[in-house]
Length: 67
Image (tube, rainbow, N blue to C red; front, side, top):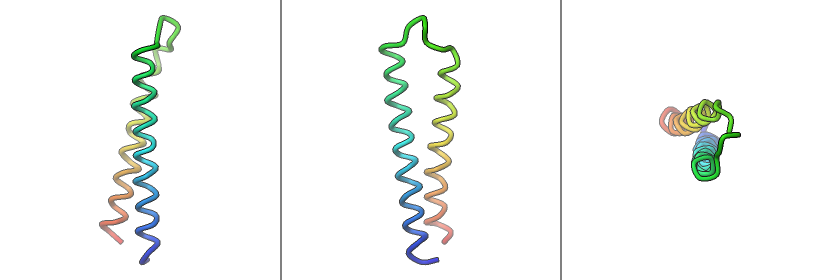
């Protein structure tokens, strides 16, 4: 697979880190600016977002390890 394994792995890790950063930013925003009108389901969406970030990062690391 060669160079494409490194490219795909790097892209997956970068996407995972961006996803984690956006999740953290959204979580901090809800902590500081959230009020009574904030949806009670927002924590579930943050959990899903963290899960997706972890999967992307692990997939990128797996691409490096198993190419």
